[in-house]
Length: 352
Ligand SMILES: Cc1cc2nc3c(=O)[nH]c(=O)nc-3n(C[C@H](O)[C@H](O)[C@H](O)COP(=O)(O)O)c2cc1C
Image 1: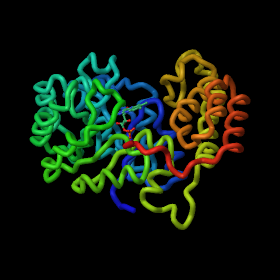
Image 2: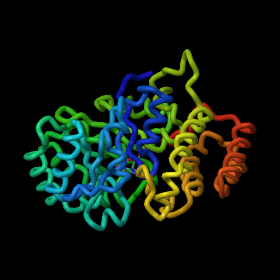
Image 3: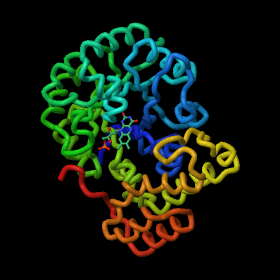
Image 4: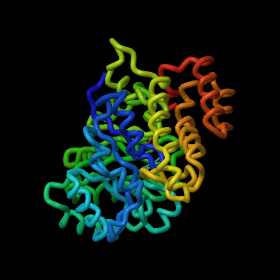
């Protein structure tokens, strides 16, 4: 269907290195680049275990990985860039999109967009001192409170040698709801001669991607988040690689990702650390300090919040999954779902 580049969006708490590895093992190079969830830059290099494990080259072997950095301090950012450069990375990404209050209140993520003069100074310093040979891409929203902020933000980005501008055409205040502002995204056409532009937002099906590609034929890539979590075969389907051999479905993917997480959360080393510090960098919304089994089941429930879209007839079993308190209940609920409901060929369209 298309040979446009497809990037897997960073999703904190979901697309860690274990998820990325399993996805890559099953769906091969259908995704061209995987972005890590954000790594908060520090001067001290005392990164969280999750962040270190996510960036560790051994955990990303054979997978095109782009580490993403969250910062509003050029010195701190450059420190992180140096650390990643030492590990062999040649592309890093700046997060200007995170809408979470705790991040935004410090003028980081999408919060940086409301102080554009500071962002301008930051970019100026960062591009002056970026390690030799390091490319810097930027993932941005179109404004803090209004899409009307977009033209001046785009004009600012144009002044810098940004290797790729990934645009999620929503404002910070819109979080993840409503439809993306495609009319505002259209204004980036002017930038595309200088900076490769990547579209991000609400691409859930191959038809959604067609719509975006037809309307914006100047984009060089599309980044997909929730659509790929719901349907991990989506990039493969978009690239038409399921025509001769059917794409592995959620039954196959679920088996592999559940086994990979089980190995981590049910291992003795997990228990050793169960006093609040989770091993292998899996701290997150799953509840530090909880038993490995609880963390495992909660982690799987987070995936089902998206994967459930592929089973429109499965609500009663999805409810059982959400209620599961341990592996036995969880496995029984998943078995019932998969045995009684057929997986759809595509998730509901993202631009309805
Ligand atoms: C649970 C969750 C975690 C996310 N974590 C990050 C992150 O760490 N860095 C980032 O730039 N965007 C993050 N995002 C935003 C996504 O990368 C993406 O921009 C957004 O979901 C829109 O794309 P989609 O409609 O294809 O999902 C997150 C989104 C969600 C829902």
